[in-house]
Length: 286
View (tube, rainbow, N blue to C red):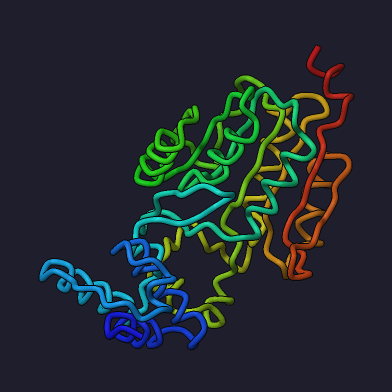
């Protein structure tokens, strides 16, 4: 292998295992320097300029310090999209792609969609692409995150209306949505010790953690929001803490949603819950 690959491999290896380090190194070489993976495997000689050598060195230092490669590159893949990410936004995860797929499968005819707590905008942008006839709105309490979400929507050529909203105090009145999707904070503070330093040291804590005394605070707020702002038969889809799947499902049922279903992700963990607005809401609002 080229010495450049070895430099990156060792740097990445400071914070992850050998297989992951290799994947990180190949990704950086391809994304940041245009070195095709097939050329790395063939050990083709690549002559780096002085500027590229400096960049390579700086990237290696950041990786060695444990910074996630997505932040180093400023990009992450999600649902076939290449999205911008910054330390103001969480890095999109594969299980969130499963949440989006569930929402799209059940709500193909949706006209108004809300991504509550959008972060990078990954859910909103993916839904806007999959449901081109829908009006998609994205809420977040962070102005920095909203700026990233808006840029991602523009880059991907989809329309998403971004608005600054605190999920714990959302507007009670407004147009109804057919679908609300959310990946809110759900990691209990007591679970910090089991988390990787790359997450703790670099991803935004406000998008991750909830107090141990009230770990379902965002789900109560989302359940109440759904009851007020979902159209009759509309659906709420949420990503959940795998250790609190049953409790989260019970929380949404207690809010008055019908058809509450807890689903497992590809790894067999309780990770998604769906609730349905009762049709009787139509009569109550009339």
